[in-house]
Amino acid sequence: MKKLITLLLVLTGMVSTASADWYVAGDAACTNSTVSWTVEEANKMEDDGSGMYKLVVQGKSLIGSSNAYEFKITDGNGNWYGWTDYKGDEVNAYFTPHITGTYNITYYFDPSSHDVWEPSAFLTDGPDIYLLNNKSWVQSNDYKFTNTNGKYTLDVDVSDISSDFYFRFAVDGWDKNCGPNTDNEEISGGTMNGYHIVLTDGSFYGDKNFKMPIADKPLGKVRLTLEFVNRHLVVDVQSYEKVTTNTYGYCTFVNNYPLTIPATTAYYAVDNGNGSATAHAITDPAAGTPMVISATTGTYYFAVASSGTTYSDNAFKAGPVDGLASNPSEGIFNYILNGDTFKAANGKNVGKGKAYLQLSKAATARPLIFEGEDVTGISQIENGKLRVENYFNLAGQRVAQPTKGLYIVNGKKVLVK
Image 1 (tube, rainbow, N blue to C red):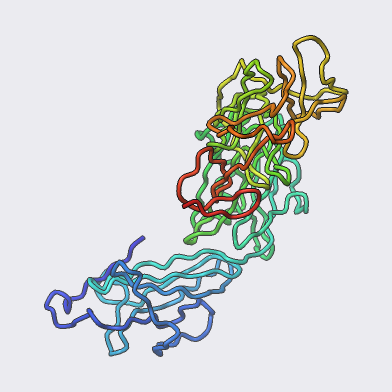
Image 2: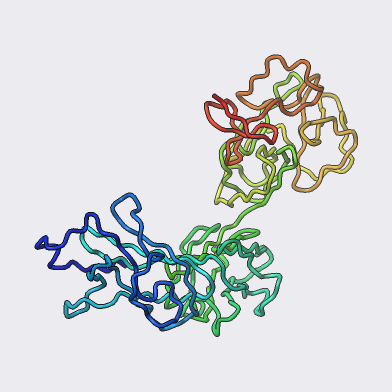
């Protein structure tokens, strides 16, 4: 919430702020130390380019602290700016983090109007956090969040919970758990696959449970993400399916739920009737769609959606199949992904959640060609080769026809001019 003070000096033009330096004085780092109103060069604010001045400092305090860490903005020449109380008198500005751990505090000041903004905070290194839920109401490493630069993540399988889903958070060093103030507070009203919860500093240690009704419970696995931002705990609950591409940037995949997938990442295939199939990009596959993922090597989380598109002419088929024959009958030729190639099945197994390519004629060159790919001059390519040189943008998405810019090709950065 913006805290403002406009001084009479501004209205009368008695003070010029155009060329002044600005400093944060007081207990700027929220250290619980004695407040110092000494002007220090380390607390000098910088112009952010928009006319606003800001200062970022590292702070540390205890959760639930009722301390109001005082500060004011000054030009170092005896002019001080804070907030205005109900009497209209200027008072010290203050900040109560309610966060434990290491965090950055950002102070803002508008010299044109002498507006002092309430600081914002972002946790950069905090305590261990655990999910307490229907499966376990004690702190367990099975439900311990991973902390990466102040962003906490945890993957949980809720598919076997047949009742309403209850949960809250336990934080090392806090005398209370972290949740709403009202017990069994429902977080319905979102979609089946995701929720966004924001708890203010007065309620994120409410010690009560969230309740996710069974009708709105996410499908399958969910990823919970926690962040402490601006003295708020921001919680995202997102259903997902996880895939990992191989060292060549490929994998086959059959989804359990409808998904939302970034463009030029997933493909279904259409049999061309000549010993090859063309791969077409998909972004909203229905549940049970066999596909190939083409992206830079890594792990990807695709969000669960409420519905998806079915591709009846899909040449990819779903596993599991034990001992898949290369040519089990006339007009059926099966190929499986091997590294960056599709090769004849030759009796190999196709696991659950994986896919294979089925053609009506035997392949004499590449079984799979991506839509929009330039396939001229590929007669020298090894039989069954999946790709020539695939281009990926820096987000890991495949680009069929790259324009000017920086791309990743065969694991290396390439500049297209």
